[in-house]
Image 1 (cartoon, helix red, strand yellow):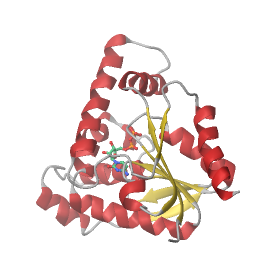
Image 2 (spheres, protein in one colour; image 1 turned 30 degrees about the horizontal axis):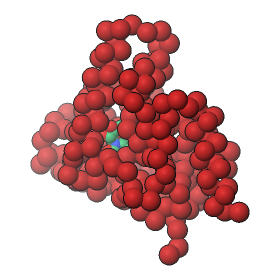
Image 3 (tube, helix red, strand yellow; image 1 turned 120 degrees about the vertical axis):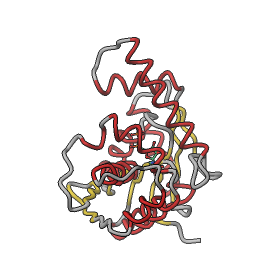
Image 4 (cartoon, rainbow, N blue to C red; image 1 turned 180 degrees about the horizontal axis):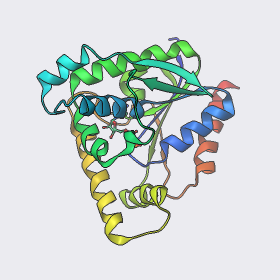
Length: 224
Ligand code: CDP
């Protein structure tokens, strides 16, 4: 079987996927694609249109008018709806809370999956997400699943944002990640799960360089 020129990196929120995927892509000269950013953009756009993400009829109607452009800018995929999207709009609490319910919608997944698959036209991809190795690119040449304990993930996400640890805030981040994990893993369409042929890397006790090295070693040993 011909494998697709894709390194799929899946895993739950704050498992280290983004940083690792960007670094791997840069080192091998591939294009980095963040699939979560596209779910976030669709979520932001629906909210900006005044659509209730839980109203499936309204979401379906709105999707028919949605046009997304993708391009490669400095080695990574950028997406645009044509509407002005403020730089940090995709990571607001509002989008954080709505994105997993939106991503559980089969109509949304259908549209987003087709866009993600079309990115193969840009050449070798390192794509991170939840269902890249299972659904988007089931024939990806390499599949990795990154994981870490919920406590480590909450601490990472919190530290990402602020740098110092406040117990109450940490608890909030922990709860919000846990809520997204439950929705992402239990949804009917393309739930977060480990592809049968994925290499699982527990990143709890590894730094970024350690994870990047594991991935690059696997890729190199397979190619040589
Ligand atoms: O950065 P973080 O890990 O917090 O999340 P993300 O990668 O930006 O993804 C945001 C949300 O999009 C996830 O919680 C999923 O609900 C959804 N998603 C998905 O369903 N499938 C993907 N391939 C990527 C993201």
